[in-house]
Length: 197
Image (cartoon, rainbow, N blue to C red; front, top):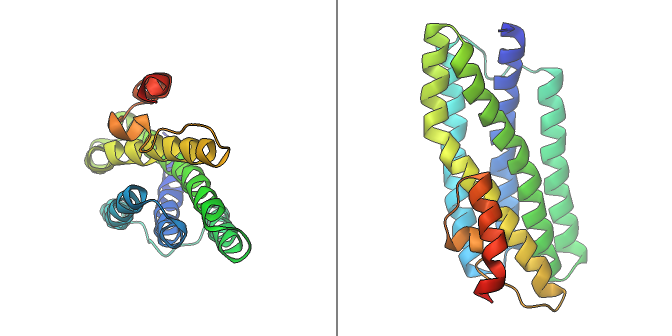
């Protein structure tokens, strides 16, 4: 395993989680649906814990959580851009449009976050014993929550769009109702939405 790239992954994972805190904080200003608000409040709390989990891994591996890397700067820029997009929507769009922008922003942020944790899980399988132990422990604490964040919010974004398009929407979305935590579960939930109308 290339240690420099593993370190970069961890720096990007930390920046993604830090950005996630800002994304959720801003998204909560945009949300109208009470159930979605409660869900994002929970995800915000979990994301704050994920920041600490990544910092703990970095501490175990002797990495400085304040170190800047080129990839980390890119991740920060993307997160700040998502926050700016939501702020623009709040300033110029109606509340339902801002809610959709927020849901889409969360999906974009959670897609990177989900990928980070998949890669951390893969790295745990190939790393040296001490590194593997730290990565595996962190991955086990976070992975299921990251799956939920991504798959549930994709469902919310889809159903909010369907609703504003004037078509029958399933709210809360099937991914939420069925509490999916896998890509297969998300696909099955989406297929079942017609039966839930």
